[in-house]
Length: 323
Ligand code: GAL
Ligand code: CA
Image: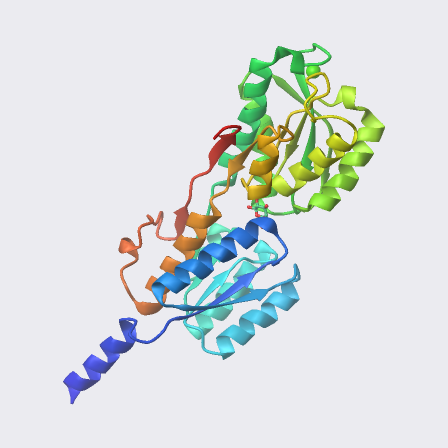
């Protein structure tokens, strides 16, 4: 009798039953998160797990209700891309009360929050790394093209397009891109900067205003916290006959993500470069970790190393034309 009970218990824990994953995405309408969702859907298929994804529509209250629903419907594990990463504690508390693991992605809870639950994890990429790399892309360009320093003052006059307020990628990419320029021996000067919320159209409106107010001759580079905003800037430049092939009318623009649309724009020369934000590996790792945790399997054999018992870090990589 006892043996039978043990066997049954083992069956349940060894994944014989289908794992149900509830995944909360801050907003479906985000080019980078679309890549992330595709990777998670594919890996769930490979793992024989059932994943349900909910669109938080950039609203934390909406997402909180979705988390409640997932828990009420008996998901075995949560994957959460919080709308507001500072709301992660409440999410951790709910997961803990339901005794299900929670894997955060893309928007990083604080270490203090993660420490409150042994089944809370974070999968992402080190934001400062992407900042450094995008600044290096600009510095490398100025080294190879001294004429890019249009006013010959040894400084790089740049426009900075920032992502959403409070996001670690907005804070650290902004900081480290500028620092990388300085480390390369140029003095960075921010001639204009604004928050464009990762959004191409917001970036277009802002860039257009900057372009009119400052003048193209006073802008030597554009640094955007992501590709969508970089592409918005490129569109404005092109509409003003910049970055269309005339070397006399060119402003180097860099983004982050390496979305397909950015790679296209690099081919035709509108965009100087970007940094690969590896949604494919992050999404795959998130699902593998979620499945391992939900089925009680060894998290050491998922193919991605876990750091400090809490983190999976996926590296960034610079991408320039021809790569
Ligand atoms: C960043 C990405 C942005 C945006 C954001 C959403 O990592 O570079 O494009 O998707 O995440 O949180
Ligand atoms: Ca200059």
